[in-house]
Structure formats: C-alpha cells, structure tokens
Length: 464
Image (cartoon, rainbow, N blue to C red; front, side, top):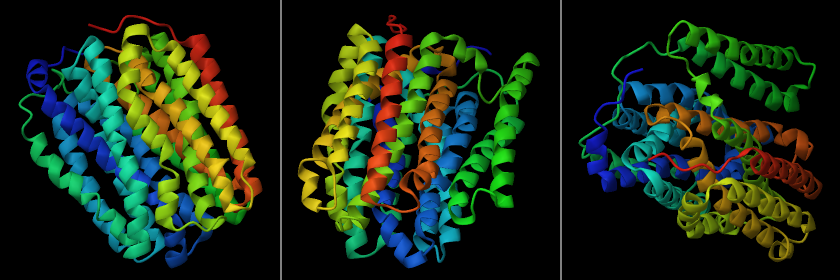
C-alpha cells in the first residue's frame, strides 16, 4: 500500500478537523444515548416486550459493529472526509424512518440502517484526528474528542427523557437532524483528505462473513428468550453465526496472502498494544454495554422513574468523562497508558459492586446506584483515552482508519453481545435480582479488562 496523500492540508485545518470529528461522533453518541431512555415507551406503543427493546438497541449495533470494518477500509481508500459525508446522509434518512415507524419491525430495520450510517462516520472521525495531530498533541486532541463527544451522552438521556415524557418517543429521532445539519457544511470546509494511492477491491466476502457471524449469534441469543434454545430458528442462527465467525479469520488470511485488501488487516495484531488493547476493549465495553442498558430499564420499570428523571439519574458517568478525559489524555501521553488502563476498569468494577446495595426502594438510588455510577464514570474517564491512544498509537498512520474501525467494531460487538445476553442474565425481565446478577457479570468483565491491561500493555513513546 502506498503512502497516504494530502495529509498536510489536514494539519493546516486542525481546528476544523477536530470540530468535525467531535460533531460527527456527537450524532452517533446522541442517538445511542437517547434510545435507552425511550425503550419502555417504545415497548408500550409497539409491543414485543424485552425482545423488541433488545432488538431496538442491537439492530443498530449489529450493522454498526460489523460494517464499521468495511467503513474503515473505505475510509483509507476513498478518503475520510467523503466517507463521513456519506455516513451523515445515511444516518439522517434512517432517523426519519425511525421517527415514523408504524411497527416494531420497521423500527428495527430503520435502526439497522442507522447503524450503517454510524459505521461510516465512526472510524473516519477518529482517523481524521490521527492524521491531523501528532505526538502528545494527538493524545490531547483524542482526549478533547472523547470529552466533547460525550456531551451527546449528557444531552441524550435528559433531553430524550423530556421528549419521551412530553411529546413522545418518536421525536427523539428527529433530534439527530440538528448536529447533522451543522456538520455537513463544516465537512466541506476541510481542504485536505487522506487517501491511499491505490484502490484495491473492498473485501465483500469478509464483510458478509462478519455481518452473518455477528448477526447470527445475536439473533440466536435474543430470540431464544421468546422461542427457546431448541427452536430451529435459534439453533440455525447460532450455528450459522458461529460458522461464519470461524471462517472469517482463514478468509482474511487468504485475502492477505493474495495481496488483496482484507477487511481486517491481521498484520495490525502483530503490534502488542493493538492486540492487548482490543482484548481489553472486548471485556470493558461488554460490561459498559450491559450496565447502561440494564440500569436505565431498572430505574423506569422497577423504581418507576419518569424517562427524564432516569436520564438525569444515569448522567454521572458521562459528567465524569467530560470533566476528566482531556486531563487524563495529557497525562497518558506523558507517562504512558498502561496503569491508566489497569486502574480505570478496576475502579469501575468497584462501582458495579456498589449497586448490589440497590433494593425495591427507589430512595436507595442515593446510596447504591449514584455512588456506583460515579465510580464507574471515574473508571471510564481514567481508561478510555489511554486505551484509544495505545491502540491507535501502535498502528501506521496510513492504516489508522482500519485500526480505528477494528477497535470500534470490537467495542460495539462487545456491547451488543452483552445486551443480547441481558435476557439470560435478567431472567427474562427486569428485577432487583436481575440487576444484581448483571452487576456481578459487569464487575467480572471489568476486572478481567484491568488484569489484561496491567499484564499486557507496554508504555512506548507515541509516534511522532
């Protein structure tokens, strides 16, 4: 693969690049955060119980998590700015369909298309920062991106809750049109881009294997709650999904040997920090995916919180992330990511265990859920920017799009699998005992991420 072109103009437009990366990620983050508080209202209007709630989340994550790998390749081949623009358009159209969906099935399909748009946006946004900034400035920029992108998660639950309680859940999907309308004109102001000199074919077979593999496993895990483990659809989905995932790595090796363009450049995993960082991501983001899904449902369906109150009640992690990410990014750029990545998940695991104190009384929020979420937020803020810097700092700049895509895909897939498993952990419905089981699972996953990071990550100078 030849060297990337037109990187200098991106560095000339660094402020615009950072704003575009933040706003583009804001769109994806806003949608994800508002949907959780709307799940009880969606179930009441469209029916389907916990299964529809799970699919409303996971239909989006399936396409986002699997196609984000394709988007990473497209980002490197055809330019990050162009791919971001396409992603924003797809996301906007799908959001309108979500807003007018007459049935749960239509909503789920539209959510899947939102995932396609999100897949196009996510790796390109971060890869633009990697192309425009270097060294400690890159770590600081990633910290700013993480912090300000998280503003979507602050606005989402509260504004989304107010919208759900006031004019209805459908309007939450209209909200995403605002950042899209602001971002597209800014994208046009970026004078440079990063593209590769050649245009190998996109790995279509690899993309199909990824989508079928991830989608099949998730389909089986969710539908078993409704049909049972022995149902032909469930068995077929799990077998087909597992077979596709098993076939994925040999296919990618074959594409690499034939000098093609693999969906996942497996040579990236020769870098220790890239491999270990993605293993940590798998464990940590799996835990986070479960906690936000379960806690939001618990607050509304067991404790009876209105949607907007539930949104406010789940804000502490995001506020901590916003307050600390830029500072942590600067320190990790100076001292290395290892111990930040080890300490963060360990602190978050303690927060998850604190929520075992929650019972039937909503007043317990103040001594169980609130302090638990504060510690989870502190742990996330300590870990997330160093993790991103460690993973992307270990790959060549020309492959930053693919590296970002792999890491984002791992994070999204981890979250969607734990959401798919939520029915098993919860016992088919939300309850106090179910919350406790979910928090134990979360604490174990976070502890595993802390151990993997402490043992595996190496502090190395950032690329200059």
